[in-house]
Structure formats: C-alpha cells, structure tokens
Length: 435
Image (cartoon, rainbow, N blue to C red; front, side, top):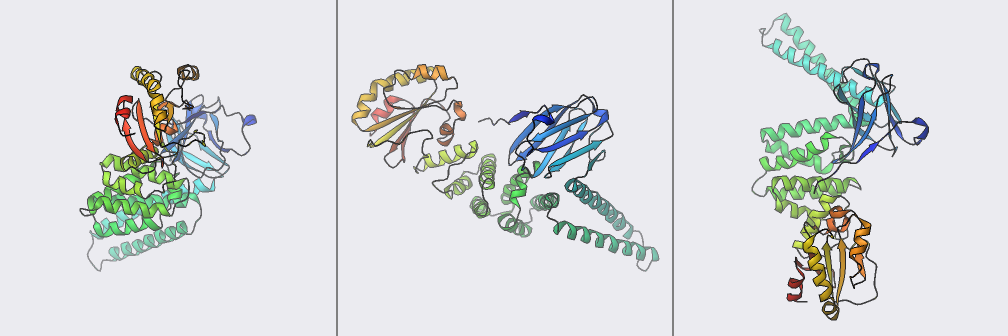
C-alpha cells in the first residue's frame, strides 16, 4: 500500500483563518515571490502547507488544529530550509539572506526556538573547546605551566557543560525535550554501531520506562530514526532470541502510552519488523494487542488483519454493517472491485449460488473497492442479498485494511463467533468447502 501525505494549500489570508490556528510567519525580503512549504509531523505522517511569499518576502502558514506541539520544517526550494519548534501561538522566522538556514535566521519573540538555538550553539562551542584543549594536553609535559592552564580551562568548560545540562533538564519547554531526544538518538546510534551489549541494556530500559515517546511523536525525522536504530540494536546486541526480546521490549514500552502515541508507536515498530523480515517479532507484538482494539493506521490495520486471519482469531467487525436479528451459522464476506473482469464473473456466480448459501444459513456481505458511486450503485442492482457496503475509498477502505485484502475477488468465510474459517478466491471453492 502506498501511503499518501495529506497536503493542504493555505492562501494565508489572516481574515479567514481560525483564531485558534497556530501561525508560522516567514519574513525574508530577499526571498520575495518564492514558493514556501511548512512540514509538520505526527509519527510517520507528514502534513504540508504550501504557499508563496509576497512581494515583501512575507508568508504566513496556519496550522488549523491549534494544539500542535513539536518540530516543523520551513523550506524555500532552492534557498534551503530550517527546523523550528511550533508550540507557541505564533512563531516569526526572520531572515536577511537569500539562503535559509540556522545561521541566517532569528526567531523574534519565540522562547522555544531561542532556547533551542541557545542549546545547540553552546553545546557546539563547548565541544569544539574540549577538542582543542584535549589536543593541547598532548603537546606539553606534566608540570608545564601551559598544561596547568589548559587543565584549568578544561575544568571551566566541563563546568559550563554541566550547567547547560542542568538548565536543559530543569526546563519544561518542548525544545529541551527535543534536545533530550536528540541526545538519546546519539547514544542509541553510538551503542548500535559499537555493538555494546552492556550499554544496550540501559538504552532498552530507557525506551521501555522513561523515554518521552509523546514528544518523539512530533519530532519529525527523529521518530523514524529512533525506531529504526532501536530494532537494529537488538539485531546486533541480543542473542539468538533477539526477535522475542524485541517484541517483549515493544510490548513493555507501548503499555505506558495513551492514544494516539500507542497506535503510532506500534505501527512504526511493525513497519520495522517488515523491513528486517522479523515475522516472529511481528507476531509477538500483534499477539499482545487487545482483541477489541481497532487501529486507524493502514499499515497496522493490514498487519493485524493478516495476523488474525493466520491465527484464526476473531476478525474485526465490519464497519458500516447493520446489526440483524436474523440467525446465521456463518458469514461470507466478499471483497470485490466493479472494474475487475474476474470479479464480475465471480459475482455473477455468487448471485447464482446465493439460494444455496441461504439454505445453509450463510449471511453474505459484499464490500466493493469502488470509488465511483454511480458505477457502484449500478453494479449492485442484481445482488439479491441485503448487506452491500462501500466507503468509496477503494483498496484504502477501512474494511479492506482491517482484513488485509491485497487482491479481488476475495471471499472470507467466518463462523458465528466471527472467527475465520477460510479465505477463498472463487465462489466454487467456497461451495466445495465445508459450509
């Protein structure tokens, strides 16, 4: 399945924008009449706002939800881009250059962005000083007054770094939380690269118990990087049971997460198991999901649907299906596409076989992958059964996702407890089976 990013087009007219919207404003005279884009993030999802700077180099983006709390990326194609924190009601990015980057911008009145820039500027400066002073240590003998001076400066730099860390740890700003996530990512990367099993245990404990996954959810590129390197950490540092260990760790980490972080975290981890080919780990994660949980993220829907089908677990309730007082022994769920030639043949055969299915107490529910309402309504005119569904979202429809339908026609036979008894691809095979 191809996931499409949602793209909104904002004309940035202040008079029609909701008062609750958060504003990101770019003021850059040398970037007048340029395309501009603002990206913001929730888990693996990327939302975009597109606009154009006016003749004065000004553009305003409005995040209409009004409650976004995380990172964003402001990009002017051909001129660069800059990451920024969007938490406050309004953020103004000022740039006096024809290039947009961290060195050329300032954030007027933004406590969040000013603090983030302060953190990274000072951290970078202290690290450079440390490198120079450590190199100087190698040039002088013990007892040298120059060496004593260098060591004194080292102590000052270390004290300054500790003071900065204390300031960051005591701050409730998102920018401080983001920095701590960057620090976690750096430690995760270093541990994974060095295959350090001892340090990996501490990383794992932090992920399971204290890592701020809610802030990670809106951190942008950190989200995917952390999830990718976390599974890789198990691949390189765990033993033969690494898949079981990974699944157990994800279960523990997810148990402390409320919505929407819980679902996004599980979906992200399932995606990583797909990349690594870790079916055992994937099954372990999916097995721990509550039977009544109904995900909304397509990749998780399909993975959970496939798992439940494979293990003959209770299948998800069909969205849009009305309750009935009639008693049925089984339900035949039919997924089809009106534009599919083979589907047309099979649906004609299903119409012919319907009286026999009725006699055997089988409820037939057809679900179309159609996107054209007129074509759909024309296709169902001759269907004798009552239950006909279509949400006009094609193969991205919720029922198609929940049942992990990858091709049509597909026939899912369920017992009275809604457990899967078989998947078929032709009406004849259904009839031949044990109804």
